[in-house]
Length: 324
Figure (cartoon, rainbow, N blue to C red):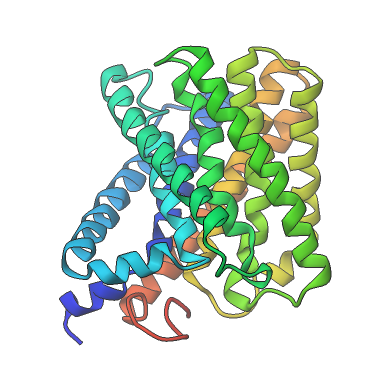
């Protein structure tokens, strides 16, 4: 199989790597601030995230031109369609570190992300309302991704546009996060277990309360009962998943394991913001541990993905694709 033909099967879910590493770059900025380090680690992760976005984006455009039907089929797939949301979330996250260095560029990237997010959200919700070929068995936490993007908007948006616009995006994200959480719990309790590649999607449950806390703090400007509610949910879910470490990190590696990273980064960032608001040392200690864990998780995922590429198992058709 030629390299060009392999690109036909390039996984759209690899955009989750950009989303995750961009989230880690923000966490590393906080880590450097907390420890008095120079901004080196954060910019390294930011550079890798931008590089991966350009690579993934270029391949995506090539696939859309060369294999348009494949891309359309992915957009209609009950799992793969949700990873299109990782594109807009990646743009929204990339715009955050640029705020203090290049505000105009941050605004342009943020605006593109917002427009893509708006179109995607309306399209996905319309499809779910009027298309009835989706079944409850196909529901999983990846369905959160297109809607979580709305919660990410205020992170940089509060510096670019009026608060009212940011509140609108935040509100729709929170609303459907609650709805999806209810459906997800029903799916998990009363239907067969997820297949192995979808196990990492459990971690996506951390993203709405985790990133929701950070965005809410940017909007409200102070910690209140709702902020504590969001952080409490994120912390408790994180603890629940942590004690089941072996269930998540054993067996074959799938490219879907990148779903572990962004939600973990979201909770880590929320912990730092909570420490900054309360000045309680406990949250600083938790943040330090979470940050170190993020670094190791990022390096592990990068290494395993490079192994897939080296073994030429990243871009292949069939049930064994994207696994190692």
